[in-house]
Amino acid sequence: MRQVIVNSKSYLTSGILALTIYLITLCLAFFCNPVPLANLLGFFSLIAYITTLIPSIFKRAFPVYKNSKAIKFLMNKRRYIGIAAFFFGSNHGLLLLIQREINLLSPLTYIEYFQGISMLFIFSILAITSNDWSVKSLKVYWKKIHRLTYLVTLLLPWHILDKMSIHWTYVTPFAVLFSLVNLCIFIFSRYKKQASANFK
Image 1 (tube, rainbow, N blue to C red):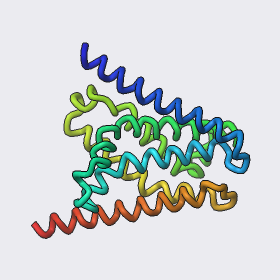
Image 2 (image 1 turned 90 degrees about the horizontal axis):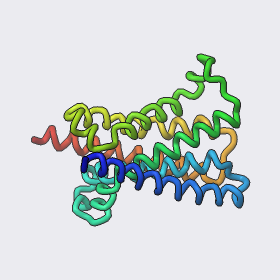
Image 3 (image 1 turned 180 degrees about the vertical axis):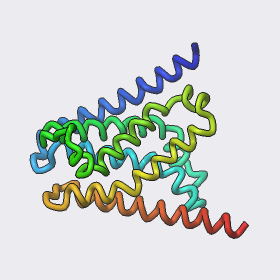
Image 4 (image 1 turned 45 degrees about the horizontal axis):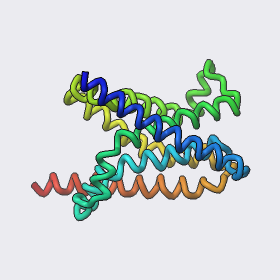
């Protein structure tokens, strides 16, 4: 029973967090006409996603920061932030689906929007399994499933550059910069991990 209460509280907190930022985004959308709401939601999803990666990537890439209060705080709140990233990402996709009248029955849609659909699929799996019940039930498979998050790191720059190449907004340069920096730090952290394993 206590487990159910803890999980409910986790999702309630995530929902309140996402709803709060979503309302802020709606307010911003009225004052930032050059930046469509869908793009703002995508940008917030990007920021939330990168924030979930900071604890694990920084601990490998920059071990000096592994005991910092900021890293520990982000580690403790990572589940909530990850669910918020899914919330923003799914709303970003839904708005674009409506705005562009995308035909989901056409196979060409899944080719053209391969990166976005793949990332949304991964986010959905991660959000569904972001609870204590999944951790206990899936055991070692839970970690393997959540490693899918690193595929998003590779897909993000491709997705942003491909879809925004013709019509950039004010947030696009920041989205490109953040996604590329995140990718570089991720590659560097993987290199350090591999080098450390080889040294041993």
